[in-house]
Length: 256
Ligand code: GLN
Image (cartoon, rainbow, N blue to C red; front, side, top):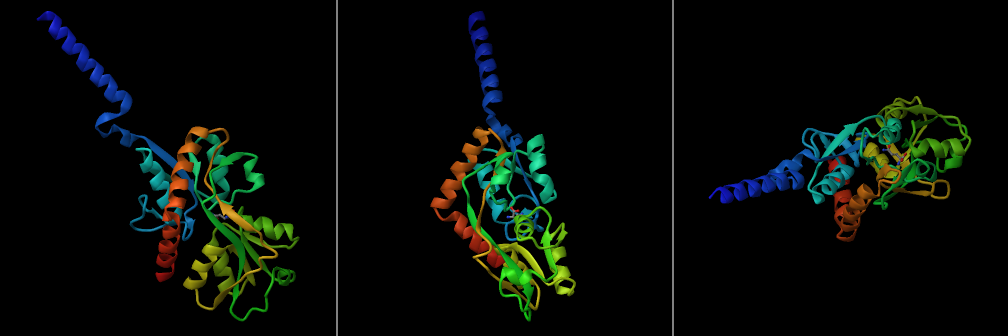
């Protein structure tokens, strides 16, 4: 009798321990992957009333949610300036960056990138009556970019002077108010701004702007998280989910 009680106690203890270790009973909800983003980049990330992750919605947010779900975790978002994202990642304030971020060689020096999930390019947003038809035409124009974006690097490399803004909306407002002649920004986001604002158009110049690949950044050497991220991205690319998300959020963004 005594022996049976002892065994039972031991078994119970083992069950309790196992539950704590494997997070039975839903306590895994406490495990979150914290994604850093800059929710100023529709259709990839923006603030809305009822988003994929809390108040955050967009293609990237849907991908982040899926990565967390595939690993029995929840996705948390820290919204910050684009410029601060890689520093926050290195400090460990966030686990990963998902922000329509182009995987550039310069950034690869400090972080590791996932499999690319979207291809974009820089384009020029101008007024409908603008005479700008190529990147070279920007030479004597007032150019606006967004601070820290690859668009800023492109314009810098072309040797042009420019003004840098913290947000895409601010740069576009400068253009609509006639205070600048052209905004250089990523293609999908440019489309969104052009459909939201009267009198603007997009000018492309593929010979001047190379294509860019968006990827998720993790701390250098964090292969454990990178493997999880890549598994989900590979799956979402193969089954067409990312394509569907791109269509859905581009339509949603332009329908507003
Ligand atoms: N793709 C651009 C970059 O990586 C812009 C990204 C963004 O603004 N979220 O710099």
